[in-house]
Image (cartoon, rainbow, N blue to C red):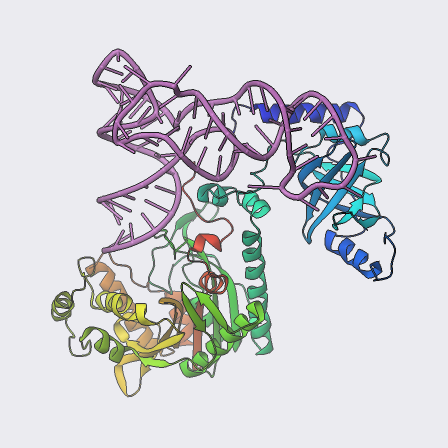
Length: 494
RNA sequence: GGGCCGGUAGCUCAGUCUGGUCAGAGCAUCGGACUUUUAAUCCGAGUGUCCAGGGUUCGAAUCCCUGCCGGCCCA
């Protein structure tokens, strides 16, 4: 992004030239540090016994970014920040007769290596008394302000590195997210699942109701889509006899961006042969409970003014009864679009955007039921019309063995006993295709012939699950915007 | 897609209602003093596409229109 160089940058470039003129490489290829800042602090703590007189360690070498200078004439203090924390440096002219004046050409933001013993200053701060220092990387742009840091949301998202430098909370979320994903892998591994990778570029974007991103492969001269779900490929693996599989990966949906949605987001999907949706519910409870304890040390999390307790068991709430209780509408009675629409209108639900029966029910759930589901809970047994990949209940073929998990009024997962009847599956896909023709502005699932062929070879009874990782991170880090838990959220490019 | 709010120095912000010493403050930067500071302190200085483009006006950061970018709410 070419732009006129500010005076600040010109000044720093001049310092760069002066350093080079003195034979200093401002960007040396390596620096061996003996201690991180935390290790240096720990080393000092280990010799800082009650009867020690002015304790002082052997010299250590630390490296990091200078975030502030406090110049005192012939002595200068600086804060050095590295991945483990922060440690203060003290430069004294006495100790650095040849190099003290190099400090004139250093700036806040420069990376520095420094060697010297660790001691405690008069003011009580554990500090490296610098006997030798090395410029590791000269920065030529100024950092955000030291006290307020970087608060402008747009800058924080577009230049996340600055956000990470100046906002501890942002670093914390990145770390929490990594710990959470790691804990998921451990949980799944302990239960005997294997982690797999399935295609991101797919010829048919099936497995969910979502608009895909389209692209093109030049060598094959073939249109491709970015996947909208992992589902159908993982179930092919179930057909192949991999009985417990999971995948953690990005999926892409070409839809709006808001507090809960980023066009690319991370999903955990798992499939387990010989399990049904009741087994999967148990697994979800156990997983999320364990994640909260693992990442936060407690199953209780504060979120949006609520105290949410992930301890199992979570209530199983019958979907149709919940809709009835919250809206007075019996969706099993109102089987045609018009009567349902009329009932919803008179219940005060805006139905101007919905056209299909499933779409109307979905709207009813999201406006009337979801907002009440604050504590973790499951809605179970969905209408077949809105669940083309789930197995019908044997006692009521209008419903499927499907559940969704809700926390703080938002959906966190979707799961079912998988439909493994290839004839039924084909019919359901065809229904979806017909719906798309009938309601062309509504999203439906797509028929994936190659998947049907797989299922026709025989898929065992299977329980499947999809969990939005971003939303879990939001819950456990008390964030209300998905942009806070995605390091580089999608923004309009400038 | 609709509504509301915002965009001023590298950063954090005031100034906009009520047009005219309104180009401002703090931090950062630059010059000077200071060998145990920690939002160091003290003295001095410079810093701008006021988001962009039109319009109104003697005069616009300020009022009007259009657009761009972002945020929130609704769909």
